[in-house]
Length: 225
Ligand SMILES: C[S@@+](CC[C@H](N)C(=O)[O-])C[C@H]1O[C@@H](n2cnc3c(N)ncnc32)[C@H](O)[C@@H]1O
Image 1 (cartoon, rainbow, N blue to C red):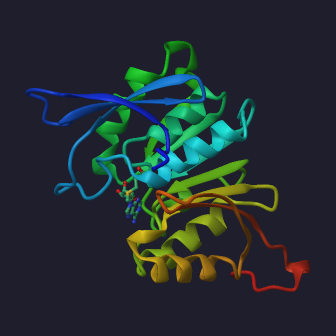
Image 2 (tube, rainbow, N blue to C red; image 1 turned 30 degrees about the vertical axis):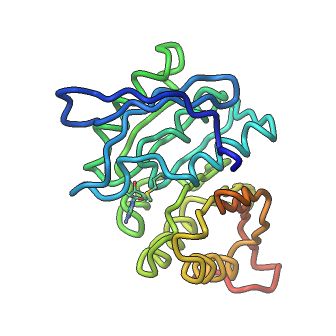
């Protein structure tokens, strides 16, 4: 089976309410140390999902760099993808629900050298709720395994519509076995408003990476009023 990233032996963490394990990944020449905890009352965001790893692997294969690029990650969970994007030069806003931010901050502080700290922000962003507090000039929007519930699709759509402009590139990844029909129907909804291409697939882990850009009114397609 093809691993998504080189995962190194993990450590059990004793006496830490935030993390049960430290997991180490090698990506794009960096070793990332990520604190994780099994899903709990905080939901699914306390562990690393294969979609985040799939995007890290895609960035590695494409030798992507984000220097001078403004990036926002939605539903960041542990923050691993946003952290890698900062290390690759990006000016990155890592977002999730408020209750996840303390753990993301901890992972950021372990992995991001102080010289890069001015390029990272960790902020609460609940889809379809407080997205309008953020600007619309991002170069990239990232999301790993955030399209897993039918109810969240219209919220994510609203959020993407606000955060993006016609130059914004959106990379979303999904672990398709979670619920292939539901996930596909979510991407189908987004494809009414965004041009979408499948750019990468890890067949063993069943992870797809999609690249999306906003349709403009001249495309003759529907645009959310
Ligand atoms: C399956 S986890 C994926 C975490 C991470 N992206 C990864 O791939 O490892 C989904 C994430 O979406 C976040 N989330 C769920 N509903 C949300 C909402 N309405 N607004 C913002 N974030 C949300 C969760 O807190 C969680 O971190």
